[in-house]
Image (cartoon, rainbow over all chains, first blue to last red; front, side, top):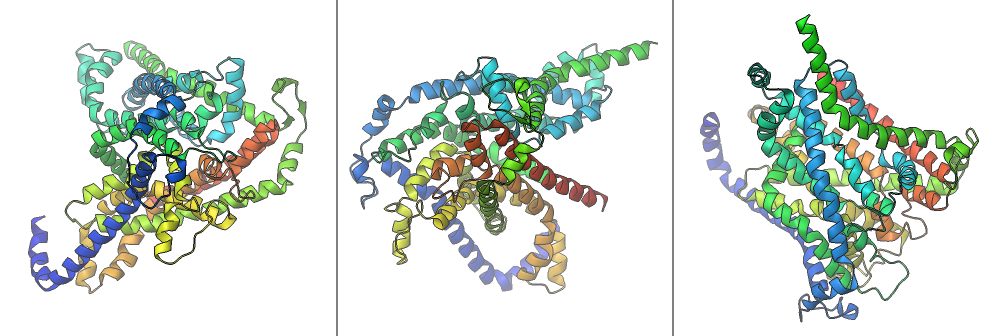
Length: 288
Length: 293
């Protein structure tokens, strides 16, 4: 850092005006793009507050605000059922699935066993299988298990862990010195105790970021819930059912209100953890 | 003797720790994977068991490959991939602006990432409203004296609208990856080039962009893999229409599935898998060569 300050000071006195112009232009461009990102959501909110579907394209963005629409949708759309099903799927999946993934990641990083590399490569190969290949046979397997239209097809497979999370955690654990594990072993701890007492707390922040991102992924997922569990709809399935290509009497303002409500939980999670989420994405970008 | 005994125990514990993951993979991925492969060589309607269905060799492959709609869906899917380079070009530009060390750029990063975390189904409902003929997008265009466009009703505009929505939703991720890539580039390269008299424009084309190549390559590959599987967006936004203009491969696959032509649906899935396999292999070879170099 110090070595940079000296030459740049001399250069920027002559170039400072030029730099200032570029700075201002940068801010202007970034602000315009930001507006492009946010404006649709603002319009969505304004639409959700309109009196009925005939007034959604009126000139005034915010005229009379019908906040009652947000109450009304709970009566017209099964939002509460969707919320309940989404929570029943997401929370146990993430908690148990993360624990199972952590165990596997620990084994791959710190335990010596035969065929370890071969088994790891098999996992790597599994991630290359596109979902469309396995989803149809899965449908028939779930049919035979009588799982169709229940939440089980969404919940049970996730309890067996998440391969991408195993990769990430294993990578993280290889940076932790083996001596930590070895000395605990000398003190008489077994691997399970080491995992619970030493590794899990060490993984803390990395694990939290991974759990949050997985939670958001499950929350927003639509394809598998639509295919296997439309009988007990999660929130995205409830929202997707509002889309109609034949019904012209679509109550767009209520659909927007319902969509906003369906996004709120994840947007709240994002608002709280935005720094951790963004840092974690940048970190994963650095490894590529 | 004792060491050997302990090694054996270590082995056992290692296997025990990875056992749940492999049980899940075996039952929920490998089993349906094999099931799917076999079903492409049978005439399976899903009504009776796969074992009871008749072997038909490559009949189902022939049927799919001779269906015009399949090729149209393949073409439609390739067309949507135009969004990948467009998104990347915008992302590089914005990442460069965000990486200039300006104050308060964290706020912009947070904003750009909002569409990424938002629920896709809600975003599609939002965009159906945005793209309506009397919708706000046409209102904005009217300011520039552009006549109202029937975004959801005309094939070309429907494709543009679909690609636009996908780029808009995914921009936040590629920007962050490019920021990561830019932070990995040492300032000293640029300093050296500056001393040699290079201007900012030359530095970007000759130094920054080539050094970002691994990031770009990775983003193109993941973009192709995800783009080839595009389904929810064209289905809920446009129902594959107008006139099949946005019927993608996976949408076509679902049509076969719903028509109980399960074997044909599986064939489509395997063609898709083959395509993705080739792209991933190219990436793998490229990465290996890069590591050796």
